[in-house]
Length: 144
Image (cartoon, rainbow, N blue to C red):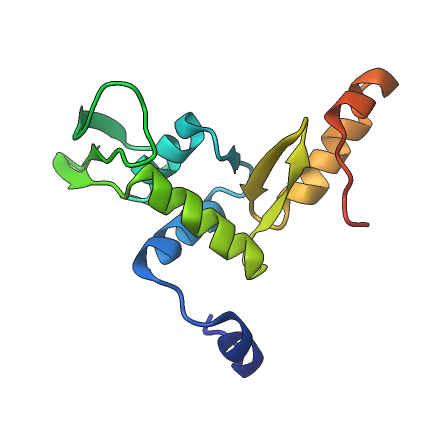
């Protein structure tokens, strides 16, 4: 659905990378991602095929062996290799999408997570099932 006039004026247009990351989040509403390098890598791979059930398989690393923010990968999608965005690009997209309120973000166990807006309610329900000491450790404050 196209944005409303108000959204278009206040949020501005999305870049190609932001569109792909948003598509992954909108197609996988039961997942959340942090800014750990592993989560960013998963999102980078998934952005090559946002509607696939799982993140595409990594075929090669185009930089060093230890994960770094400027790493890019090749993902195998339908027998074809596709380059990913850098982990830095993915992290920037998450922050931009959250700032524009296009996705949800909040801290859980002291780490910032991002996901679909429905994630907040799901997380709150799961935390409510925990014993009191674990709920305190989660330190999740929903925006109710």
